[in-house]
Image 1 (cartoon, rainbow, N blue to C red):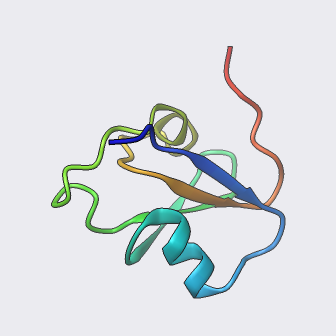
Image 2 (cartoon, rainbow, N blue to C red):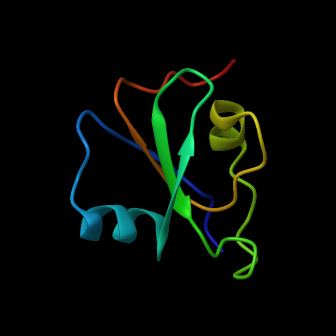
Length: 77
């Protein structure tokens, strides 16, 4: 299984693009910095790996690849 990613979009993309990015049905999750994140709503059922960067952004455990809307994500040190 590949490492989960965080894909940034300046503006909200189409539903199809979001679903392609997360690999399935989407779930909206607020980030602690006010941005909006979309993750795979079936991440736990699909046993997707923990996305450490997305988990930092959301302040809770996030599984699988995500799309983040607005701004640019800065890698953590």
